[in-house]
Image (cartoon, rainbow, N blue to C red; front, side, top):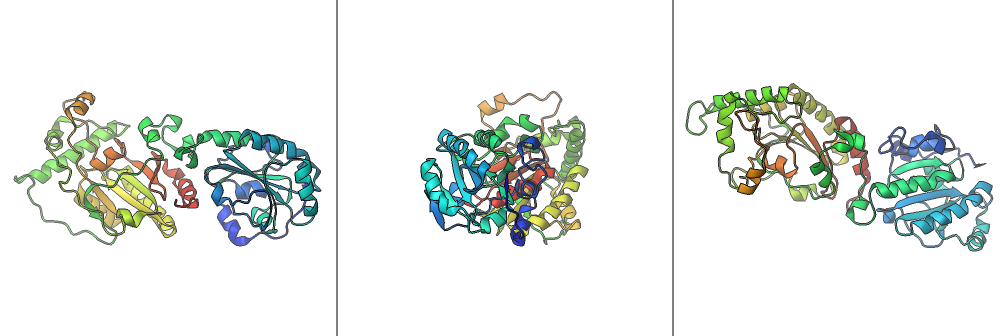
Length: 441
């Protein structure tokens, strides 16, 4: 392997590259790398690819931004590098195998040997563009040896850096297969299965809505950071004096049911019978639904990465999670991420607002609207509860996202597409970094 050490790395760029994203700790075998623990791999993998710096091309010119939706291989090489030249036939074969899904670029060293490049391209019938590095690209990627292969996925994320030539094809084939070929799905990065609760077996409905437009939030009430909480005077609901007490009883019964139902789909007890009357009420599409506040309307969210957290306030687990989301909001809101907490429609809204004010919640909250009445056909298809009471019914927004349990976190990209449902909270940082690296279409 021919070696050319670099003495300087662009500090600003390296800050961007120090956080690993999609690349799991052992996504590819260490044996596939020249230097498994080297800086090229550890600094680059999982970060957004850096645009090329060049003015001299042999072949069709392009940019990494124009290559979105395809797998890209950058081959840092030189004509005087024996191993580089020996790998050219494999490069040619790889390009021939995937003409529509792969972009291969030979990035030649700026130091010497470029004068021989045009003749070598002709003699060896190289079928991919070869370009002369200004020196800035090599510095940005921290290249210190040749050949160095950088493999970038369809979404512009570096997935492998510094692999041996003999393993480039295997990695390219894996990246091409993981998102399929052609169509919208091929242009969307897919997160690793173990990032989700349930792994590869997580709910089919959640898998099928990947890449689909995110439905709007339909809420009956909103709470914004800074609103505080002023307790409202007790009032009757439905015209009797004990409506609030019945509601509180429902919340307690539901919480107790959730404590014994790990999947969150608790069944109401006999004491929760009043809840059945509420869920059976006819609800029109417009009833009680209010528009999102300024800053959360559709026009305000164009080009914004979003996180929706469906929760059932009142449970200790969800309260801890809300406090954790506060920290994420502090970190990611300045980077352009909009967080929204969607509370279960049967939540105690007064208690929820009081808790939000108590912890200085920095995230807007929405109280989900009641679901629309099911058609006779849909109602007949619903499973029958095994106890005296009905199952807790999801709100209108939760239904639109196929969320029947809580808590559940949904991540939406800059183009308003659902990219993850049921994401593990410990993977939220990585997922947001991936989506922030993407550009709005």
